Length: 544
Image 1 (tube, rainbow, N blue to C red):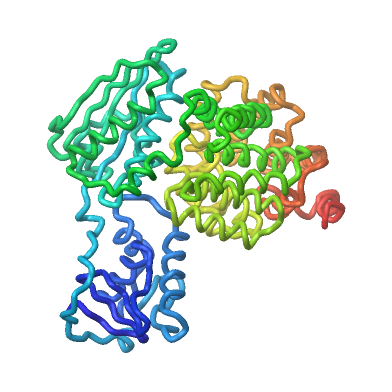
Image 2: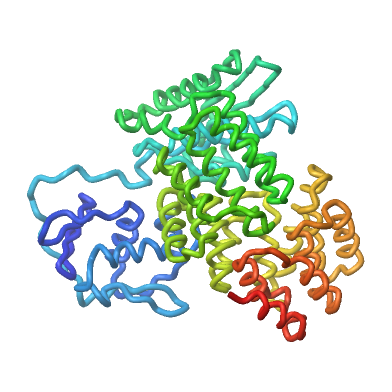
């Protein structure tokens, strides 16, 4: 049987069609896939890991994505389906087989069965190679824009940028990468930029055999970069024999600017922003503002401005009106409602406005567009989960973001921070954080961020001398920075230097937001000083 009846609804597995007495019930593809799997396995407790493996077979997602799909299903089915899908604490979920009934297939005409994810051709766009690290920002931007464009096709499964870029600097061969990513095709390339002259070489490979399907070299002016991206996208579509709908073709160009200069400034802003130090954020903010000035309809530029402003306000105590940040976030979405990072940026802005329920909703919207969005996952953990003190959500989401961006030293540090001291995984995550911070410090010797976070990772590992050495270097570079002082307090607290930890923290919190005080309240690194009278006074004196 392929048609099932339950709670006033029918689901035709062949057609992928959910109906009730009023007609078709709309359900997102992943939510429908989850409901289908549960119906095929009634009366059995199914763990979260199994469900994630089935519904998201080739991507990394957090438990939040699964929870959101279950919420979608319960909302779609309504109150009459109460108890149809039950949560079994610490084990998973079970579908009540007593409420499920197989019925004869309806031989009525209906829409063709939508392709399952496994029926679609699949592709990963690997990071493009460059002649030197100084051009990585530009090459990464080209590859990311091709990924974004290809992902607009409903007939093609595209591995997200955050996942495919984990293979940067790997020595695996194409076939091995294709197997790791579970894709049928790979697009790889290289970029050479010299003044205004640009060379882009690309190759489309069959994943399993490594057979070369198409290759092209573009020697053009830099101003032709958008035309090159379009030609590469069209070539992939043509060789995979995909038919694009008119609205898909329009969507492929929606998130992009038509100004090459604005594009350059936006890419530079993205490159600078990831350090999250005050000097880098101020510079990145200027890059995004210039991009928006050159193209006033450039949604990604406005989203970048919002993220910079939120960090400057929330972490560094800059005098920026939260409502003004929210206005910029709304402008980003006005120009592009399909941009996950714009919804994530708006969530951050709403958090800064202390509109927490709306912030949570904005993050969920971003993740429904792109479950592997680094921004949406990272900001939701860094703001809402941290503010609420939701330890399990913090650990699972920061594990995800640590995998999504292999140069991110902050996320593995947070995993180590929120794991209990006797957890056997804690040293591994701390070492991962330190190793990444060490590489970042070598690439950015002028930045204090990898140094003070590397110092905290060393403190978790019990290396007192090296932790103090790294912290001293960070304080030499940026002694007045809030985050540097904050992490200095964390390092001293973890190492048992109670009085110095309290002194550093008292100096750090002047002028910071209420949200930052709430972060201090929940930060496990301050467990050693939590009962100190001056720590308690600090929290009371800054209470709303």
